[in-house]
Image (cartoon, rainbow, N blue to C red; front, side):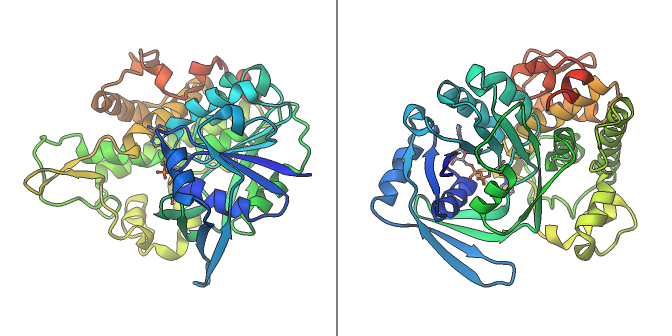
Length: 400
Ligand code: NAD
């Protein structure tokens, strides 16, 4: 079968995916970017040239991959018809616009992929794709396959390294795709990372990397006096006692949520959802110098050396925290609030998440949590299941 692939997005990840997919036989690639004039800039910058992916393999060697997509456009009526595989590679706040744009042109049995999906992708997908998307399968990946950055916009992108493995969950919803889903996505991205299947989509939601950022922002800045600071504080190496305790509690709330889901619905295998400290023990064994507790593990993980808080520079070369960065603007509405929503449906109390959200919503000037309930006026800016008509644990586990 000819894979007719639509890529939604235009940033680092979308650049890599476009270059890799366009170089495969039997894959026809359309790129849809809805952001400002991005599609037009990309098309013009590329002109008649080849698009280049500079791929650094794990062994340090580099591969140059050249190719050309079939189409780069901002017009869904041109890009979507005929596509049987649609991959979102764009930050979560932009997903809604793409869902709305593609919905009228979707064909039956389309496979829709979040690469990465980020929490709540599946709920939004079911809600916004309407009748056209009724038989769309939903594939959610836990992260992006590569660390990557654009070299020259529209022309060249660098893959700094692929991950080893990457997990996804698939919800079929009666979809009868023309191709094997996981094998085809693996073919499109190439041999690394090795794609694996998580037990179910709820564990992909509860596992997201988004979990660490808001509590660490809160723990660091909750008592900030508003005065600029001389240096950008270290993000992980500077982790304080309060933040580490809060992370421990938030993580326990997630694990407890997973356990309750499993108790009530024994078919739901939730064993992938583990405590953050156990996650570090598994994933960063070789990079951590002191594994005596969660705080020390995070502080001494060499993979994080030198990473600093997102900061804005003031005119006199001092720094203030940048609360518009994705650690807040994405990881609260498309992270913590989704976790909180799932926990609420499971009936698990979440004092640590609530404390984090209560601070975060004030900083962001939004209202989601009111008197311990997710009923604030800005809930429609989040991806909690409640916003998309999922009102019980039964509704959640029946999404398959
Ligand atoms: P990116 O930062 O390159 O995304 C920028 C793109 O988002 C823009 O090119 C545009 O297409 C779109 N966009 C920006 N502002 C917009 C707006 N106002 N309206 C609509 N669209 C807008 O993102 P990326 O680096 O490709 O990452 C994609 C996702 O993968 C993110 O969630 C990121 O956190 C995650 N991720 C990235 C990396 C990496 O190495 N780049 C690694 C791991 C995870």
